[in-house]
Image 1 (tube, rainbow, N blue to C red):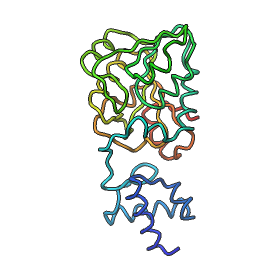
Image 2: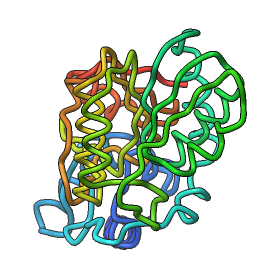
Image 3: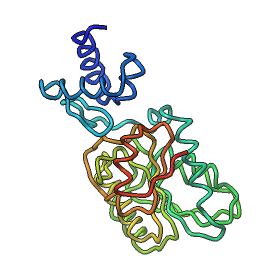
Image 4: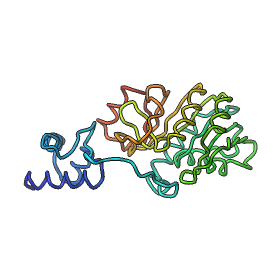
Length: 251
C-alpha cells in the first residue's frame, strides 16, 4: 500500500471512530510499529489529528452525547464481565461497600448476590439486582432520578452518601484522560466523589475503551484510587502511561 493511501485510511479511521490505537493500525494495514508511529506523527504535523498515548484522536473528538443505559449495556460486554469478576474477589464478608452507576458495576452486583455484605448504591439497576438476596443488605439512597442512567443524584443523594462510611467503593466512568476521571453528568460525578471521599479503599473499573477519553465533568483524580481494574486488551503503551498514576490490574 502506498504511503499516501495509508495516511488517508488512517485519517478516515480516526475521524470515524474518534480514537485509533497503534495496534489497530498495525493489524488493519499490516505495517510495523515504527511505521504506524511515523504515520501518526506526520498526520499530526499536518494538522489532521492529535497524538495521544498509544495512538491518536480526532481533532473534533468529543463525548457530548451521553449513551443511554441500554446502549452502554451492549458495549464491551465480555471485558466488563471479566473486570467485574476480579473486583468481586476483592470484597470480604461483612464489609460495607458503595457501588456507583454503570453497566460494569451492574455486572459486579450480579457477582455479589447472596453474600454477607452491606451495599450502598444510588443506582436503581444495582439495587434491583441485589434486593431480596439475603443475607446481602442493600441500601438505595433515593434522590432526584436520572432516567438515562437509572441513577439517583442531587442534594438528598449527597446527604445520605456523606453520612456513611464505606470499607470499599467501586465506581466506573465515561473517560480517563491522564489523571482525570470524567463523566457526562455533574450531579452523578458529585455523588460518586462524596462516596469515594468516605471510602477506606477506592477502586475504578474501566474497560480499554475508556482510556484517552475525556467527558464533560472531571470528578476525581486517578492517583487517589488504590487500584484500577481493566481488561487485558489495553494497548501496552497506554497501560504503561497510566501506571504512573495508579496500580493497575488487567484481566
